[in-house]
Image (cartoon, rainbow, N blue to C red; front, side, top):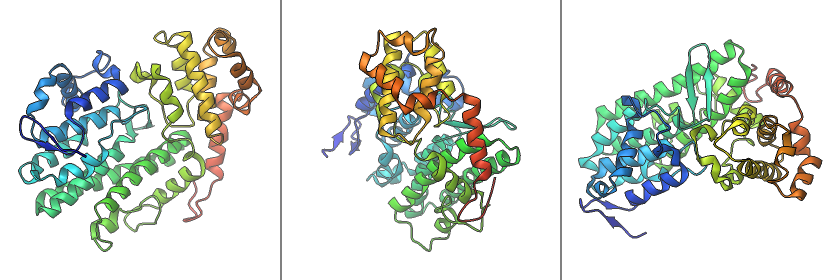
Length: 387
């Protein structure tokens, strides 16, 4: 890949910052249309993107740490969208190995630490909730862990011992937070939010493991031993609930939470953060939002239905798309008949005759009760742990 040199003399191997802003606008146009709350220190990353969107010429004069910040902001802003910006490897590894890193590593580490508390709630629907504490968890914590462990390795490599220790303690705090959420949800018998959380935790610890491997952390590194494969192997430092959650996700939810390639075709879903996809298979409410939205035309709702059906045909062991379909058509005056002018006749016919349609006829309460019972009956094959 040809190197890019900005007017500030910053040399880049990754995407040029002006092109990155254009990518953000394509995948999340709502970021720049006044829909989001940009106030508060924890939302400054969103305000920064808006500033550069209006001042593209300023991007020519940024330094390494500012480019890192922009990449971080871009990924936080789009990680919950259908087409996230492709800067993962830059913020996890590439920029930490830049030839100018020694002049910027402490600032980049501070940005990473600050980002742990960035407010992502309006830029993702892939969330679970601890109702008793108001705590929210998403896949953004996985993104954070993946950047933080990259930062930790870079700090160790460059002999920034104190800052490396500080980073390690916050990584441990994030893991502790996720463990406590799972324990609390089990204690409060919140089956559905527990299930959502297992999918998010599996993603988050998976991100952490991948970057540990990416940096080739030694097998006998004490910190690696403490935080590696937490969703797969019993670890003396943590409750077996982490391995249990990993097995629950594998048994019930892993097939549901993928890249949603079929939904990328419905570009109308990029109009609002409210249209971002939630944790599957619990998608009835999302479908209802889409069906009731006045920002979507009937033609666009028909396009979404076709994408849901096509997605199900690719992944027919997953139920989330059928649930979203139910929520959408049940919010229309005449159900699926409301869309017969907007969907090809043969597709409507195929939908009506499909198992997808039969799944959508199951009432939401019955559907959720089924998952509650499955969770109650499930015993972890690795630990014997039960809900």
